[in-house]
Each structure stands twice: as structure tokens, then as C-alpha cells.
Length: 306
Image 1 (cartoon, rainbow, N blue to C red):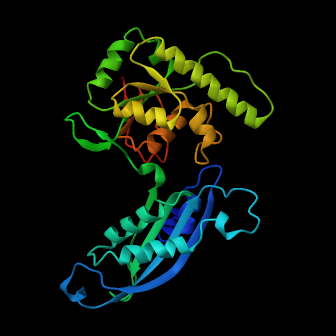
Image 2: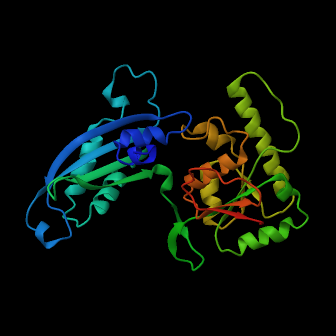
Image 3: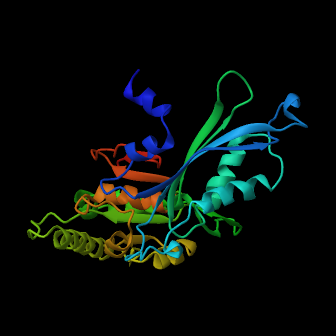
């Protein structure tokens, strides 16, 4: 059996570990939690209960330190079982997929929750277990705003990575025109400048230097077109996206404030652009021609000549 197949049938704990970033988050899990409920789309499943089994793994932000052995400082396992009970109490559903989505959404409301794997299986529909598994992230919750028709809707921006050749291109304004014509809010991301960057021995200090170098390039891009507004915080980003403003991302604040950001990719502008695209539930990540598509992207990626 291939490693991919083994992983497909493994416990969600193994799935979480296999897809963890370089700095894995803390995880809590619920294993083999069995509940009897009425569920199912077939007539034979109506009017009777059947056993369903939950296996859930929740990735969380690091706990505040020190813990002082205080239960109020952690995210309790009870919050997972309470989410299951609350979703089942909403009434009968036909699909395990519907139930899984509801449970995941409730769990991700917890302030510490970052990503959740939910596996639900029916135990009484045959000789084996029949089920579904989903993975959902806190970042996948789209921003709400007003669309081009003036109606309330989810906003899925276009995240665009511009390399140095793109920034320096004589036809940059025309390229930005074409991006605007797609009718989506545009977020521009850049990498480090061409110049050799300062190198120091301290990893944390080097990370800040690399991020600041990228921000210098962001300001250089903004100087080339007056439409480009440099923003740093999530509040600034959300405000600008709701107004349809074309923005350039200065990454230091979000990257350093987040436990979920790439730890070793501060000088990799494409990796940072992908991370931001996932945070913003972007419609697409657009890369210039010749740029390698990052592996494992959960966002549709388009390689274009811009």
C-alpha cells in the first residue's frame, strides 16, 4: 500500500501531522466518540437511530504561558464534544458532509482554533464503516463586503505575486489595468529586492530583516503607480478590500503576529503570497510566468504573463 493510501485511511492525527508546517501547532484530539442519532438520505434510515463515530483533531494556537496548571488557560476537550452535541441538536440532516461542516464551523469559532480535521463514520450501514473526512481552517472564512452589483457577498480577492521584473516592467500600469478588469479586489505581494540583503547569525533577527527588505520592495512598487496602497494589518487589508482598493501587502506585522505563518520562508515572497491567499480565502493566486507553483496550495494558482 502506498504512503498516500495509508495516509488516506489513517487517523486524522496522522493527516494533521503529515500536512503540518515547519513549526507544527499544538493539537488536541477526540478519538472514537460514538453517538446514536437519526441521520441519512435513504428511506430505510428514517425513523430510527444509528451509531456514528467521530474522530476529530484540532490544531490550536500555542497556549499562553505560564499555564499554572489552570484549566481556564486551555481549550478544553469538552468544547469539541459540545460542538458535536450542539450541531446534532439542530435537527435531523441527510448527509454526513452537512454534519461535518457544521461541527467544523462551531469548533473554529473558538479563539485558539486554527485548523480542524473532522472524520464521521456510520457504523451500522454495512460490515464496515462508511464515512467522510473534511479539513477546514480558520483562514478559510471569507471577508464579507459589497460586490460589484452593490449586494452583500463574500469577498474573495485576487492575490498577485509580482517579481522584480514585473515591478520594473515599463508596462506595469497596463498590467495593473488588466488585473482590475477582472472585477475582484486586488492584493499585490512582492519578494525581496535584487540587492544583497544583510545577513546576521540570529535567526529571529534575520527573519525581521528579510521581512523589512520585502516591505522596502512593496514601497518601491507603490511609488510606480498611485493606485497601490501599502497596508500592513488585517484591519487595513479588510477595510481596503471592502472599498475595492488595490493594495500592496507589507508582511511584517501579520507574519510576526501569527503562529500560523511560514517560519523559514520570510525571504520567499511566493510562499508568503500563498500564505496570505489562504488567509484571505482568495479566489486565485496569480504568479508571473516562470515562477514555480508552490506545492500543497489550497488556493487555485494561475501562472500568467500578467
